[in-house]
Image (cartoon, rainbow, N blue to C red):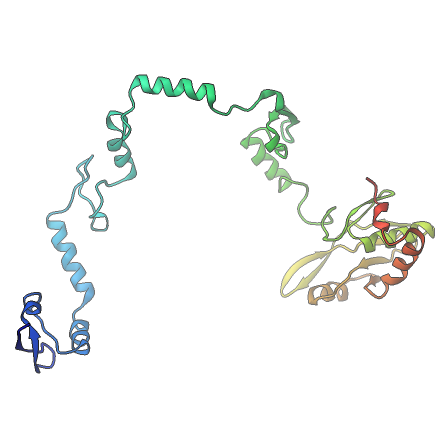
Length: 284
């Protein structure tokens, strides 16, 4: 392949280059370094402005409404989704549906398409307007009959499922259940409840929250139980992180924390009397 001498556009050094490559471009460079240094001096924004100015002289137009397309949409056929839908749906759209074809499709859908069986519907009472409505089994958790009632329910109660914040049943991660009118969030709480009931110690589940601050954020602390005779609070806690330590230290009343060491007395009492599977004492 024949080569000829050319001058580098950047450093003006002579070098050999193939004739076929010379025809491709006017600018020739002896190395990639010279090419990058030369092209970096050309202002890219300036070139883009030149292209935009050139495009505005003869812009592309929307196929449907014949409006000039912006430079950012120069490769599009339509100016909007609306124009695209109208143009593409002319004469029945891509599939060219006829009136007879639409009628046959409608008859097929009525015959074979899935229609929920009215016999399987569940009757429910709307939480907002107290009107009866029906739902399919997959929507059995639905509480409101309409979107309007749903928004009204949220406005009044703050949420759809139960209350937000405060003490909640099934809020823990342990094995939970009811035992003689007391809801226990773990097997440790169950052991503590059984011990106190069988020793005639009167107590109740605490539902009052006590505010405290942690990392400049406000929280409420809900101890587990309270003794009716002495008004002592009890918190059954298997682990203590910094947040738990903060709420315990800032608690304004007498608080007994039953940790993994103190709970051993209650668990030993229950297992000796009912066995290791004492969680089966939960009411079914």
